[in-house]
Length: 103
Image 1 (cartoon, rainbow, N blue to C red):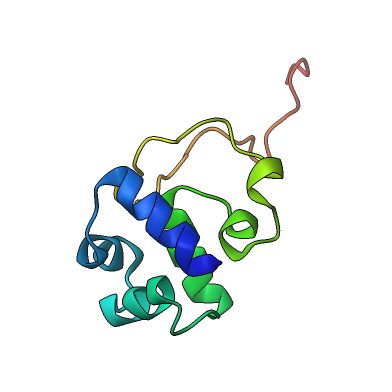
Image 2: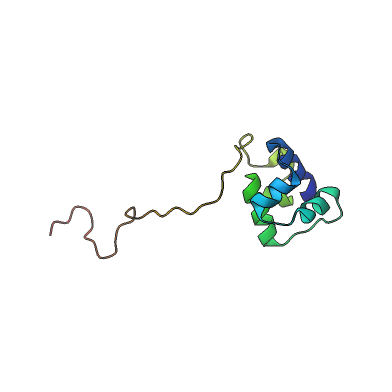
């Protein structure tokens, strides 16, 4: 089941197995074995990488949800390269006075 879902989403994006492998940072041979049914399990880490690269939930990818009950709202746009954002200044400092308190 996981291999079918991987292939389905990979093809929706028009990606080769090599492209998905690059985006998910997993071996292309693993994707090939999953899609061909030669392998049907992966580690949690690999499942997370594949799900993130494909823009689907890990529950859906591994079959927790059936197709008819999957909580998805249409086909997501292909994910962009992963990056970490720093959100400095958006959280209140612990030593700052609460809003409305005048010093």
